[in-house]
Amino acid sequence: MSKKQKEMTNKPKITVSTIGLLIFFIVLAIIVLFPIFCITLAAFRPSKDLMRFGLNVEIDLAVMSFNNFIFLFTGENSYFMWFRNSLFITAVQAALTLIVSAVVGYGFAMYDFKYKNQIFMCVILIMMIPMEIIMLPLYQQIVGMKLIDTIWGIILPFIASPAPIFFFRQYLSGIPKELMEAGRIDGCSEYGIFGRIILPLMAPSFAAMGIFVGMNSWNGFLWPLIVLRSQEKFTLPIGLATLITPYGNNYDVLIAGSVIAILPILVVFLFFQQYFIEGMTAGGVKG
Amino acid sequence: MNNPNKKSAEAHRGLQSFLYSPKIAPYVFISPFVLVFIVFFIYPVISTGIMSFQTVLPGKTEFIGVENYTNLFNPTFLKAVQNSVVYTILTLVLLIPGPMILACFLNSKNMIGKNFFRSTLFIPALTSAVVATTIFRLIFGELSGSLMNQIIGLFGFKPIKWLRIQETSFAALVFLACWRWTGVNILYFLSGLQNIPEEVNESASLDGATVWQRFFYITMPMLRPITIYVLTISIYGGMSMFTESYMLWGSNKSPKDMGLTIIGYLYRQGWEQNNIGFGCAIGIVLLLFALLLNFAQLNLFGLFRKEE
Image (cartoon, rainbow over all chains, first blue to last red; front, side, top):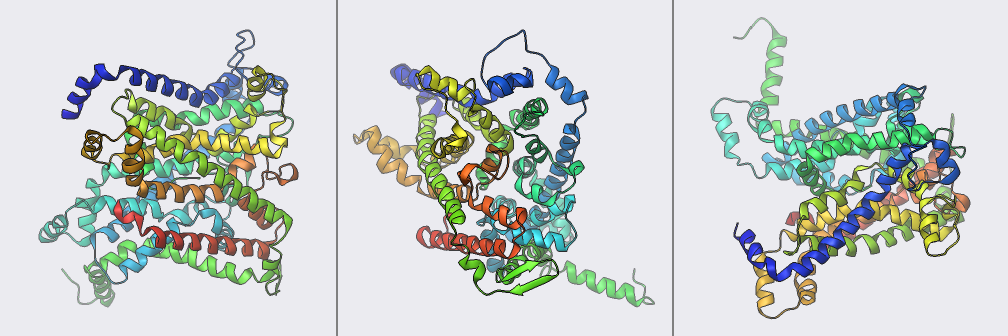
């Protein structure tokens, strides 16, 4: 509060730099949003135009139409099959990863046991190794387990994911251990304490991590590309990637589909911004 | 309550009380991680280590010594390493100081609409690498009407075939990285700035410290932990870049391998050409490199995560 008052009293003195900063950031925001604006504009134009003239910002109402979107929704293409697959994998992966990682994070945060530090070092170890490096051994393991071309092949290796485990452990270390004692006195088992007392307290952290895991899953490319074989199981990013050809004959679906693919995550972002920011700053999400 | 006639019931109860004891429960809680760690990390890494000394063909596997490792010194792999390293260095140079200064601007008392700009600059990170690269592939198109060619046309330059020239194709890749990650790194630095007590800056300015002095002697040193974190994840992100290069050229093939990355090379050998033994050798070298990097970082900077 006092900070705000100070800001108020300072205000008249600093108008020049305020306006300077404001203009600077407005220009920056326009530059940043420009590519998305361009692709959206292109989605309303015939895809042949894109092949002939390239992506640009000329607005010609005479040629603009909803045709690409109409074709996307009603025409002969696989887009919504991919969309459905992505939605399904994202939902299942986010739910399972959250539950499993929360359980593990709880174990690390609330108990003292033998080899705890050594095992936790393993969590840090794999958090610090990019998945791409071990994808060949991982792939062979998935082949050996006959999980190729299945959703489980995509989900299982990352079900106890180090970044969420780390995040949940941090989050839980703020919860007093007396709660567990109280639960034990009331006759709860160790699992009852987790399920009935701790889990409800974790709800806010679930939102942040749900968005973190969900976004990675929705946007994932390389691992699903390796695991999935049949066209009818492709996720949205893989499906869209197959549309890039030198002939550009699929550009109507590619462009309109790219715009529609951004939408769900943008809508979630607009409503749950603070959880995005929490989730992003909690663990490294690069790549 | 209990049924003495049924031994199995008793055994079951015994197991139950074992699992429910407070000594065993923590191991039950962390068991999923241990399982995943063994099945999807330890075992595959060991078997990769073995296969890296073999040629692996269907029905025929032979030990060939260190041949897979000596084969690594070929021009294509060195080109891939060079590409990944150059890309990583360029992204580090641009994506650490820039967002740090932008975060300081956003955090300054003179700024209005801080949250609005923070969110707007973050929006590119919501797009997947596939969609983002599709957009940039078109922006950097070869046609004279594509956006980048129109922009340089304003300054009197002729259209460029961006993705067929080494330097300009890297410009496109780096441009894309900056577009997607500036907002994310701003978030990291903003969260780091929250940890600097306002009194420090105030007393410094009372002592007559200029804005620049305060930035170099107070803000930068206090942002050290978060900078090291951003540096680390940027190195990993840069060195393991694949999707952007794959999508920018529409497949893993770019002219003269100008966009080939280390992971792209691994993908080509392991999947496209089915050189599994050789692919395993690449994987092992990368793993050792990552472990070395982690080790160096832990030793140089301490366990920075402890500070969080």
